[in-house]
Image (cartoon, rainbow, N blue to C red; front, top):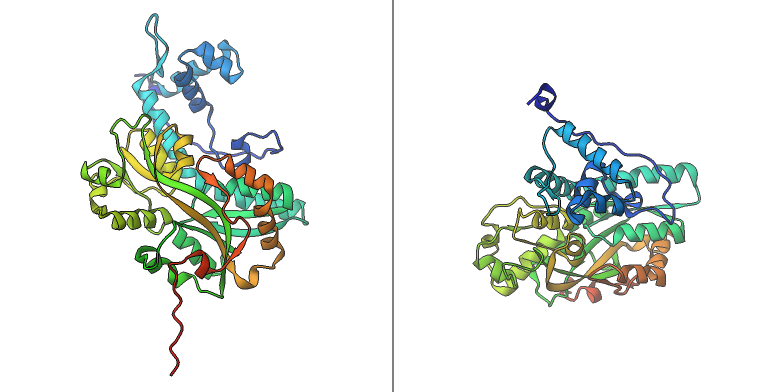
Amino acid sequence: MNDQQQRPRGVHLQYRFEAAGDDATPAQRGGEVQNPLFDLLLALREHGSIQQAARAAGVSYRHLWGALKHWQDVLGEPLVSWVQGQPARLTPFAERLLWAERRARARLTPHIEALRSELARVLVEAFDGSQQVLPVFASHDLALPVLREHAAATRSLHIDLRFAGSIDALRALAAGRCVVAGFHVPPLAPGANVFARQLKRLLVPGRHKLIGCARRRQGLLVPRGNPLQIQGLADAAARGLRFVQRQDGSGTQLLLEHLCLAQGVDIARLAGARLPAEDSHLAVAAAVASDAADAGIGIEAAAVRFGLDFVPLVEEDYFLVCLHDALEQPPVLALRQALQDPLWLERLAALPGYAGSSSGEVLSLTRALPWWRFRTPRAH
């Protein structure tokens, strides 16, 4: 290898400000990370030829070929192999590079989204004093960035969104670091100890009020075609599959513990491969799509985004919660109105596995969470 090829390759991250109007791409509206090299590799993999990839990308053959040669020179490794009469294929190095980047992108997206939200809040306050700001800490979800976009466009409400596990989001609400928190639970019968043990100490009837947001499907994310024929958690545990879980304190990890307990599955057998826990649905999907795991737990929309199959396990409600005193504050009122907007419900229904569920309605803890039992002191 020459001196240029022997130099270590660095990774440089940057961002830019852009106008994000109605014609903006999802990446321009949200926290997506983009890079021309990986866009090129993905196009080549999908179309199997430079000519078709160039046509799909809206650029010339010469431009795409020049870009490919440039990146091969920079990296010092071939990226595409050709065999006469066969489609162009990514080299093993290019495949590894592409999937490593997609997994890193999935892991980074919630954190980049938080940074983007903070910068957007500063710009909103500087240029549009009429727009209200609502700090929200919430369990990772693919509908909330869409809700933020909808609220900004229709209610002049900027949702300052930070993703965290359900428990951390509720703790942030208790500490006064946000006005609204987001968490999710499945329909549960009284005595659901896993959720009750974790959530009851953070939710107080009368003090906290729930706001209906959405219903979504959780299940197993498996490779396309489900080649291992995984039918449920018992299947995954019995066969010692590489199963990727979520981080401690996340609502999805609580759900996994609850389902394993209800089905008599030893959750420890799902950790046999000791894969690192992921902190978002997209990161779980990326791990399965890159063949780093055989299965994982997550929402249907994440499976669809990564071209995976989905084995449904349960439908759950995603709630927003605030203090009772905050219900009538203008930003929270605007949030409730945005959630009840038919246009929002239409956009929500377009997300795989999502539907409206009491969206925007104020709900009491004991009615929405029937497993919650508030014990009043016994009179002497």
